[in-house]
Length: 235
Image (cartoon, rainbow, N blue to C red; front, side, top):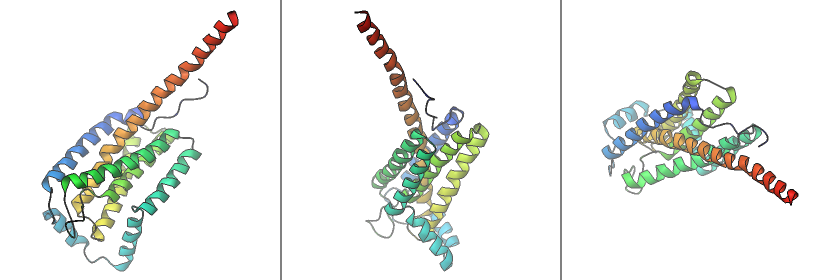
């Protein structure tokens, strides 16, 4: 096989930590889902946080609306296209797959959980748990942070810090916007954040595992073709 193998999207130094993080996040998603199953009102924590952010000024409301747009289909598509373009320019094909598949799987999982949990807001038809906007923003931030970690060759401590910081900032920003706009309960945002922390590590691991298997098959193929050519020549 010619050329260097494609860089992994989930560095080995982060795999154990990511696995633990995904396990804890999955537990949180389940606990919150059980607590608020079929509920149509805020919990105590939700009410307190809502009271704290209630009455933000018009400037901050415009910021929240801008953040919310980035989680809508049009805004999300723009972000994905921009991120994929960056991955292609950096020649990171696995990162392209992680962005597209990871973000799609995260949003799809959040949508499925909404129907399973059945929590509503502003009426029985508005399913709210977990927040798909928060899940998407967190998933995209995780993909970008993993790309940066591999690109910069960061070690376990620095890489973990970068990935966690990116997830926290993106999740908190989008979650805040959803709460300010009254689109979600705060615990919905937490559930969306945790959903991304579950789906993205699993997706990244699967992307690397699948790519490695395909790479091994491709590497073996030239040898088989050379052997066949040698046998034909001897005949």
